[in-house]
Length: 267
Ligand SMILES: O=P(O)(O)OC[C@H]1O[C@H](O[C@H]2O[C@H](CO)[C@@H](O)[C@H](O)[C@H]2O)[C@H](O)[C@@H](O)[C@@H]1O
Image (tube, rainbow, N blue to C red):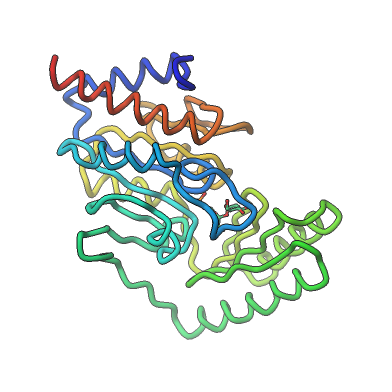
């Protein structure tokens, strides 16, 4: 390990940095649990200060494209993401797309059909019924989804709430994502892998670095190529090629990449 970055990952990042054929390099990152340590209150999440600095440094390079790929609703992600102009934002697990500019957010419009809007209303009401009477269980609403949160609940409340939410998704035939202390029910199915591959093809990026901590990030790891750099943040089963311990180490890996790119410039 060097500064929280395992040696095998450090070597791979150095190799990518010195590989002219790996340009433009797409650096794509999950938000919660990867750049921002997990919090009980999602509104309290913040990118680590060192993360803000290294993202700005990477984005300043002509040969790097920067993207955040998150389950967060776009408005939420934009509010919390302290990223420079030009950063691609993928929200709601791929449903929402935008790019930051110096004047604000240039975002694609997402429209629901009347049927989908009705379904979202029904989901909200049924998810609220799942949470009702269970301490620490609450429902987040997004433009195309509802999320049953259980982080603050005891297992006696959290486990049945998550099971009921998953059953609700099956009953109503909506997309269901089971993340860390969340069950997300969406009327517009998407996944991070499809969104990330679409972005890399648009940009013509031969190599992608993607880091994520949650089970929903496995879609991205699975969709990427063996020549891409996939990094699992934290514990848990994964198909990612590399692993770091925590968000601090994920940021250290980005710092190592930036340093190696600088060194490659001078080589
Ligand atoms: O794809 P991500 O950027 O990791 O977003 C996934 C979900 O993030 C938020 O929930 C997670 O972070 C919260 C704050 O740390 C935490 O309280 C919760 O338990 C985590 O699951 C967000 O609230 C969800 O809407 C996102 O889908």
